[in-house]
Length: 77
Image (tube, rainbow, N blue to C red; front, side, top):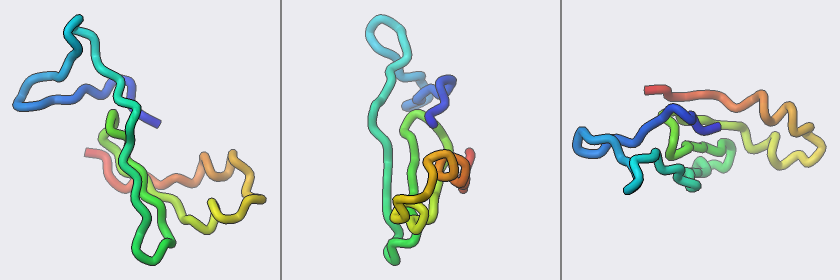
């Protein structure tokens, strides 16, 4: 889900490796709502916040294609 064109900026400067290449961060933000009804997901290398209803994830008969298609983008800055 991460945006390959996304670049980290810190103090007005783009974050790069020593060789000048763009770092790929393999870590993401994830949270569960207090009522456990929603799972929130935020790739660190993207500016979008996603959510999905956890009922779909708890139902092991839900096809993975359906899960892939129901993520809702809540924020895109």
